Image (cartoon, rainbow, N blue to C red):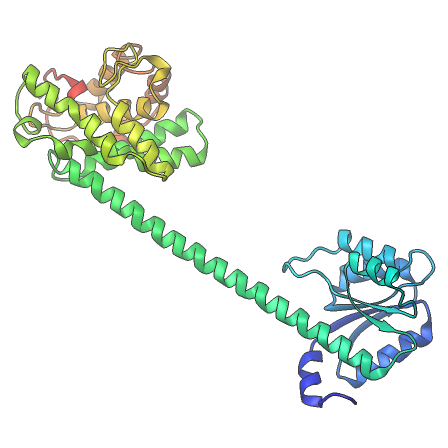
Length: 371
């Protein structure tokens, strides 16, 4: 043999080859040479019409293909191989052309159809060994690169998941930081998120939108970070001046969340700014009406008010679930989107509301738009 046994045996070990040549003597010569080099997995045919089906079944590492055969000839076989035998690892099936025709036109045509190299007839064993070995080595290298690419892609995906998890944790903590100003448990933001997501599902929004609403909803009141305690935590009715200060939390929250490339934060910005708008146009900060108000903000408006009514606040005791549901329903078409309210009526309110800690007789009216 012309090559060192150690090198060639490493390259040839485990290789799977297909030989297609309409002359049986050529097939026998190639099979004998390949066996000598340690290639034991060789499938051969002298019928070119079987070549594509054979390669599709065997999925070889290399095809040794004669060009000039009865139809289909080698050119047609290569054309069909490109269509019928996909490369799941991203590495095209290499073809070593066997031919006595070494004209430039033949070579160019074969290369255009996917040929990797050529062996001239009659065969020179050393030339065959070198070219087969080189193509198999290149095949293994390409496969290793593809596997490495898959590993790197998996690493990138894992890292992306870690970054996303960290980002969501930061968002959650930001929402809690605002909520702790008037709810030491921080549970309000999570319940609003759950109710908003449940409402979005009841409205038949797609799964990605539902998830985005669920992640954006807790940030609806993030602007409360900028509201003074003497206003935010006041027990009793706000003065007109205090009411104006409180309403600024929508603008503050929107500014805090503005200019982000994150879909969650972009939606959270809309929600923070618009969740106190009213269907009838009497809300703030812009007096938008009806469907001018982003759907996510209309959803969160219902979820926020329902939960606020059921919770104790410095300015009010908690309401019963039934009374809170009735209040939301009565505000349909005025404060709230009727379609959202209709979806809300079909929810399991007791599962979504906080656990009751009061007697219903302690209920009292409250201006829910300032929650």
